[in-house]
Amino acid sequence: MEDKVSNDPVVAIVGVTGAVGAEFIATMDKRGFRVGKLKALASARSAGKTVSFRGQDVIIEELTERAFEGVDIALFSAGGSISKKFAPIAVKAGAVVVDNSSAFRMDPNVPLV
Image (tube, rainbow, N blue to C red; front, top):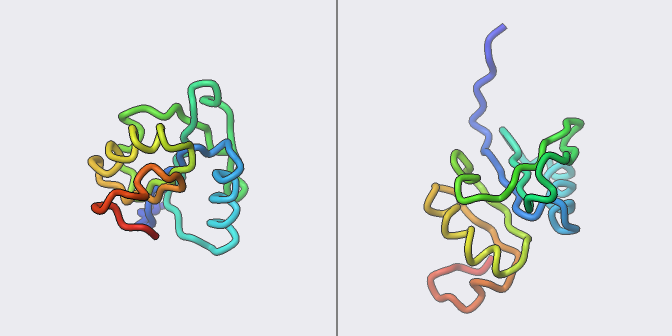
């Protein structure tokens, strides 16, 4: 059997254990959003736990500066201070970032969605 090569994006959810993180997962599933791989990111105290996505357990990883390698889309909902620190790192790693906080609301170089 051949390995399946997916062109679907690698999606990271920062703050996956929170209410909005859970809603990100539910909405991606409900809308059939194509995901090649889900990276579940949260604080060190949540690392090693799991979240369910499309019938699979996804192991939660600790949010670190290296967590965005290979990520195409990063969805943030972990508060403004986390966004201010890690969103630029995710962008530098090549991800498109969608942030749920007010961290960049007044930044003229960051488009509002």
